[in-house]
Length: 193
Length: 177
Image 1 (cartoon, each protein chain N blue to C red):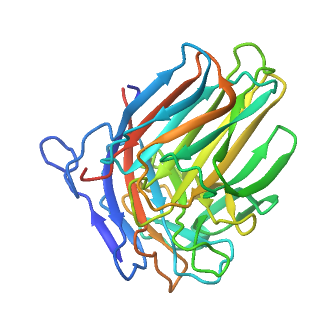
Image 2 (image 1 turned 135 degrees about the vertical axis):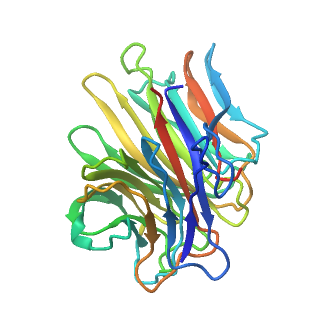
Image 3 (image 1 turned 45 degrees about the vertical axis):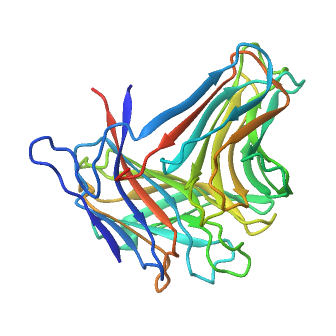
């Protein structure tokens, strides 16, 4: 059994084990809020000194749909190395489906041009152990859009079959993301980092 | 900033694997706890993955735990309930799994130091490069004890081990007053 016994400093009551603890292990790395319609968002030169990455986004596209998707690739890799598995609910029914050997990871859910005025979708993606070169990368995402009478909520998982450290993330719209769409990349530290 | 993460502990499984991971002497001065884990198991009997067993304060009595879950797999979805402290699925060594693929899951435990029954929420992904034998979903889990949580044990199904490179991270989240 592996165990970690946590210790507390007597003066400050801050943790000291297994490494120094600081408040704020979730650090904003990059954020972009679109001023104009944009097809592609790229987070490049991602630092390797975090344990996990998290993308938080609100988005809307100019395609004539109520809901839309984003297509994500890592490290510029457009080989058939992506899988995605999805659980959707629209308020009355659930849906489950999978796509494998894709050239991108198509993740949900954003607002489309047919959504109500100024209604955006949102998603949060967790990429664990992104710099670990011993692991293929598994992504977990929560997403949703409520269009005041319709909408979708989804839990998705994705597989990026590569053991390379993730150094860049590209998020593509099928059309384009519209103004005020916002994408933020966070790094989450590990203990001792 | 309304809420802050604090990184409390990290465990990375080394060569040969390990039967469980324990976080001990958890301080009581945070509001919530969050575990982020990326495990893989040597279990060969789970064609959709192994279960993650989460025990608090060394209490492994299954009847003290309840959970309800909602999940998707293959081209279907389902929901259920059980008296058990297994709260997520993640890849294992069954023939249906893809080599070198690890799980991705969060266990969120609000008000862990309270003197009331503890409820946690879990979302998980057991990935595989296939349109079958994948599963992703949610658990809502209750530990029917009023005790503050001072330790957490994470384990695969009995007699198997977490594989090398599995990672487990414990964070404290404090509500800023």
